[in-house]
Length: 248
Image (cartoon, rainbow, N blue to C red; front, side, top):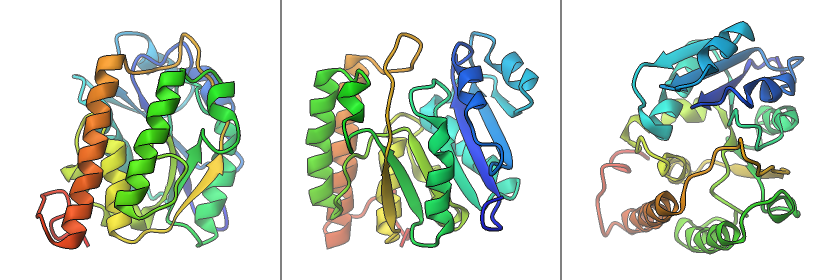
């Protein structure tokens, strides 16, 4: 519990056996009440390890995609009574030690969502982010800030905290099951005029950490731009889109 609020950490997992135990070991269990892992059809020992670690474990028999995995995670966290939900990748790329800080920002009532930014400070390049990904991140973020009317340092982190109230308000079932889910979720949060905060976060790039290849990165980037442009056109009333229909 944190300020009387139940905190859940969700772990959307795919072939995470090599990094899961290190990730879980650094989750601050003094304030985290529930750790939920959804396995998305892994081919390794992720499920067995998660159960051995005592995590509440859900299994997709077939891979549903990164976004599809998160949908299951959020739904389960809310069903189990979470007031604050922190989404953390189990690949040990982000520091689990920041869960308490992120959850505290939600518990304060000042923010509905908090992003752990690799760009604030020197976390990204210092942690080994490939330079082309850094440049792409900065370029996409610049365009997104203009179209969404925000001033975030990045939109592409896989480490986020949410209030349960905001999660219940967002029609996540309309979002993609692929990687662009993260950006569609943020666009919906913006559509609902959510207060979005950020915290600086170190990151680690190493062999076991998950990463999408160049082709998937290009597809993701195009999807990000489409989402941001669709949001702006919908705000202006120039275009209706199912993602934002009756969403705010």
